[in-house]
Length: 102
Image (cartoon, rainbow, N blue to C red; front, side):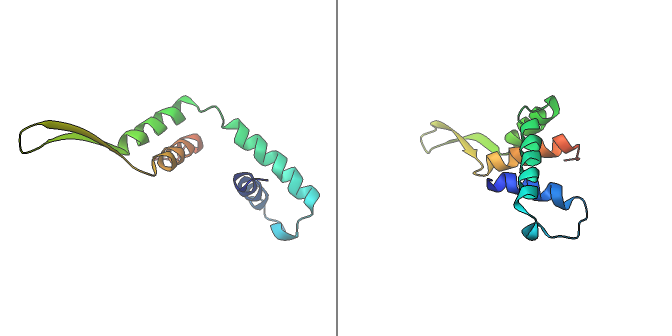
């Protein structure tokens, strides 16, 4: 189970109050949660229109482009991309999938 799948599996399991902590759950039940987690993640593989729009909007917020000139007046265009661009876009797309306001 990858870290991402396990995080989703645990979240699914812990979303319903239970007496037994995840760590003491039998492997068969963890495997079942793994199947559910993979199905949930797979369902988000194809983004909705809203998710794409939110991701695109967030991408624009993470890119700074402009121009400057040197002492001789030569123009230089530049672009700076936030190193966390993918994480920002991912979060924006997940928020859109959940219907959370940005």
